[in-house]
Image (tube, rainbow, N blue to C red; front, side, top):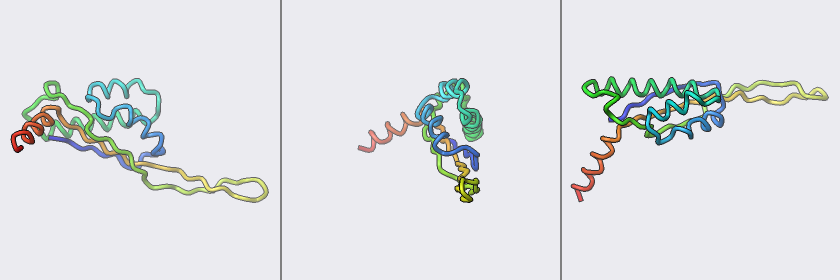
Length: 127
């Protein structure tokens, strides 16, 4: 069973956040948390917190199973652009340049490897 966590309106550009998300896509949760803990980019702290939230959501959905016993992995992590604040910065000769302050939304889906194996068995049996 998978669990989802969302983070909305993060005041970091989506491009910078995607660099951090690409580091943990498809990895085990324990390994992903270690990577994020030592990553110097500013988005790493927010993604680390979001990943812990997704694990907590998984634990709430599966109260009879322990997180330590199940191999959880990052199934999906997506970064979409959020709202954009438009500002003006003065430029030479009385002109103005537009500054776009970007934000983003992050979606993390965490799943267990055991569910993945069970799905494969069901598909093989149905053939």
